[in-house]
Amino acid sequence: MPLPLKSLLSTFLLLFYVTRLLAGTPPKTTSNNTEAIPPSGLGATTIGERVLLLSDGSWKIDNYYREDKVSAITDHGRTVSLTRKLDPNSQKPILIWEYSDQSTGPIQILVSRAIDTGKSIHSNTDNCIPVITARNLSKLSLFRVIAELSFQTSDGNIASTSVMLGPLDQGEEEEKVTSPIYVDKCQNLTAMLHIPYCYFSNGLDCTNTVETSRYGTIPVQLAPKPSL
Image (cartoon, rainbow, N blue to C red; front, side):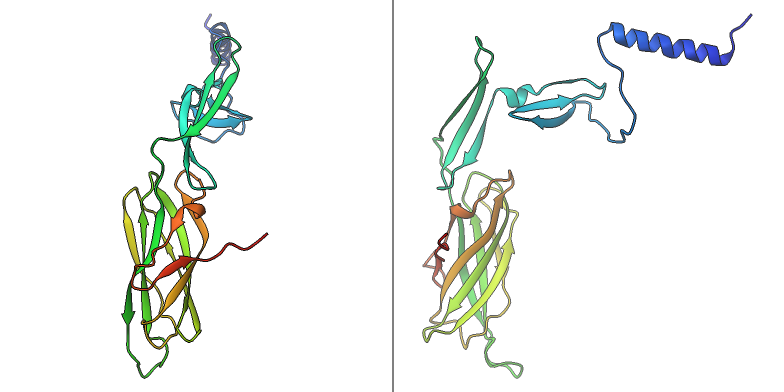
């Protein structure tokens, strides 16, 4: 006499579960799980360790991060190599850092051009449009940098503007036209540069790697950092 369909289904599920247990692999949990797990696994970070979460519900140590070398930038703007390996005897991690042979270059920001608009019927003062150029001379990709510039005339008047530049790959440069600044003309100006935000694509802060140039159309120097 044939078994009812419900009994066949229950028997199949029981055999499937027992087979998975005998194979040593826990069954995939689906409760409250709507996230698609890639075939290679989903990365996760524990305290000092990287792991891969697998789609079958198991996990393993991520060997790529377990024994690899990554780069970092110090607060002084130098590149260091961070190495993490396992001691074959103790199986404890060995953490070593050293200065990289190829130090990173700067993020250079300058006023490459300045456009004199001439007096108009609308205004007698917004007659200069600075053009800001950012050059990524580092070994890393630049995500974003915000440049705030304060321009000072020979008689002490100050006008300010700001731009956001990026992303920029290694060796790339970007030119951006700012809004007009309220001065009579572009001649005899100097500029002070402040960087409130600068990050590489890997998440490292690049504020301390920014350099300026006094040989652009308008000389620029970095603003002094506020004292703590």
